Figure 1 (tube, rainbow, N blue to C red):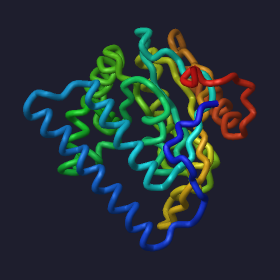
Figure 2 (cartoon, helix red, strand yellow):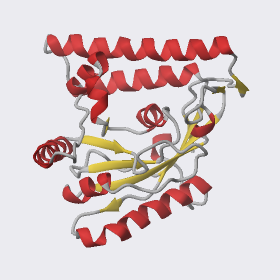
Figure 3 (cartoon, rainbow, N blue to C red):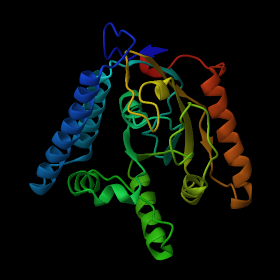
Length: 263
C-alpha cells in the first residue's frame, strides 16, 4: 500500500455551506485554468502529451486537496509502456473517480468521455486538444471512425479510462454494467485493468450537494485481463470476470501484494 499524502493531516468532517462553496468555486476555477493552459499551448503548437499528463495530475491533485482526501493505492500496477493497448475499467461512484485515477496511476491516461462534454465551449476544446476520445455508437459511421481513432491513440501509448456502470452509484455498490467499453476493449484487443475506488462515494455522494472532507479513499488495482483472441460470444464471461474482480476489490479481499509505485 502507498499513501499519496495529498494532505498531511486530514480531519474527517462534513463541509459547511461556506466550505462547499469554496470547493465548488475552486473546482470550477481550477478546471477553467488548466483548460485555458491547454488551449493556449495548443494554439501556439507548444502542447505535447507529457505536458497534458502533467496538467491532468496537477489539476487532479489540487481538486483532491480541496476536499482533503486521504488517498492510498493498493494492488499491482501494470507497465503501461510495454506496447500493449490498455483500458482502465473503474467503478464510478463520484465525480472524483477520474482525478483520483489520474493521481494514482502512471501513464498517459485519458477518459473515454461522453460526447456531451465536448459541447462545453472551454472544457470541450481543451479535451479535444488533450486527446480525450469519445465513441458515438448511435451513428454507425461515426462510431467506426471514433473506434479507429481510439485504437490509434491506444497504440500510440494512451491508456483509456472508462466506467462500465455508465453512471454514478449512490452508495458505492456496483450498478449493472453497460457493454460499450467491453466492445471497445475487444475490438482493440486491449488489456483491461479493473480498478475500484473505495470510500469515494462518501466524499461527494451522487445526486446530492453534500461534501465530506478528510475521508480515506483507497484506489484498488486488480489483475489485468487480456482480451486478445476472445470472441464477442465471450463478452458475458468477460463482463462477469471484470465484475467479480471489482466486487473483490471493493470488499478489500484481493490477496494482492503491495503497489510497485511504493518502491
